[in-house]
Structures are given as structure tokens and as C-alpha cells.
Length: 205
Ligand SMILES: Cc1cc2nc3c(=O)[nH]c(=O)nc-3n(C[C@H](O)[C@H](O)[C@H](O)COP(=O)(O)O)c2cc1C
Image (cartoon, rainbow, N blue to C red; front, side, top):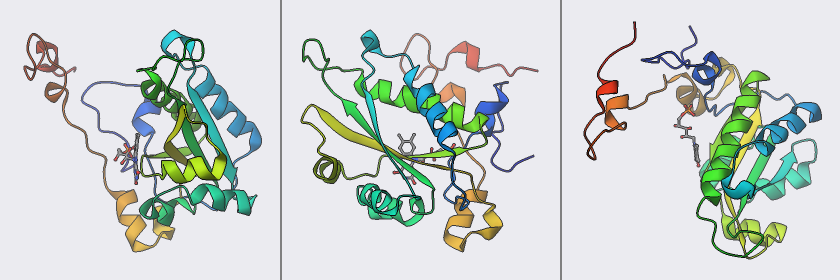
């Protein structure tokens, strides 16, 4: 079994168990057909009032000047590994409803849901997505002319994950460490905050 495959306590879609966030990417481009489908998957995410508050700025390593503009909007620690990915995407969220300019409290939630859809579509296509909160929103505003009511919130590195054996030590270690999660009883409650729901106390056979 793949070291990164989730060791689930209950059955889930294989697709979800197999998704993980690599630090090392193969030097292999992603087709435009695949990229269009990734954004199409994001497009069909649910959103509050169907506002679709997500926007994306995308750069591929085939266009190096554009790629470098996008990478300049990441924090240094993320630049260090994300520069090997063939595709970088900046997720920009519109924080106001288009129709009445009121605050959209669900906007960031909806950007995350769209990222979830995109990640699932990527996994089906043999691609990997590594999301990042470590970005420079003010720099992104300046570089891309992002309007006032919008904010760059997250980024994604997208590509084919590398064979860890080919990676430098610093990246390899992270890409061979098994994935960990809290058990259900630590976050699924009934009746009172912190009280594990009884449905989390039994294991499926
Ligand atoms: C919204 C979001 C922001 C993240 N930000 C970063 C980041 O800035 N840098 C980084 O190296 N990983 C980042 N990650 C990756 C997480 O660390 C990773 O998803 C988590 O450790 C679980 O690992 P897995 O995705 O392989 O299951 C982020 C993930 C998400 C969903």
C-alpha cells in the first residue's frame, strides 16, 4: 500500500484516501485539457446564494515570466518547493455579494469548497494539488491589480507528484511521512461541545 494512502477508520472513497499534498513534483507539464477540467470542477462547487466568489490567477512554467510573477506572491518557505510545480494558481475571493455589496461571510468557505472539487478532479486525473495559505496578499494585489472587494487568499501548486527517491533530503522526508488525522471522537460531538458523539465510539467491521 502507498505510504501516503489514508489508513481510514471507516470506509471512504478510494479517491479521497489517495489524495495527499506533495512537496515534490515531476518536471512534466499539465495539459490544458486537464487544467480546464480542474477549473470546471471548481466551477460546479456549491456556494452561498450561488455567488461563486472564487477567482483564479493561473501560471504555468511554460510561460516563465508569468510563473515568476505568481511565485513572487508566495511566502519564501512555499516558494522553495512550489517552484518545481508545473502549474501555480492563486485563489482570489470576492468578499462582497455582487448584487448588494453586503459582506459574504461564506466566501472563504466557498473558495475552500471549490478547491476541494478541484482537488478531487485532479486526483482522478493522476494529478496532485498542494494548497497554500502562505501567500502575500498585498503583493498579489499590486502584481495583478486585484480590486478592493477581493483578496488573494490561498494558492495551489498543481502537477504530477515526483518519486520521493528523486527528491533532495529536505523534501523527501515530508513526502514519505505517513498522513495523520485526529480520530472522529475528537471533532464529532453530540449534546455538548467536546462530548464525543456516540456514533464515533464504534468501529465498522
Ligand atoms: C487551506 C490550506 C492551506 C495550506 N497552506 C499550506 C502552506 O502554506 N504551506 C504548506 O507547505 N502546506 C500548506 N497546506 C498543506 C497542508 O499542510 C496539508 O494539506 C496537511 O498537512 C495535510 O496533508 P495532506 O494534504 O497530504 O493530507 C495547506 C493546506 C490547506 C488546505
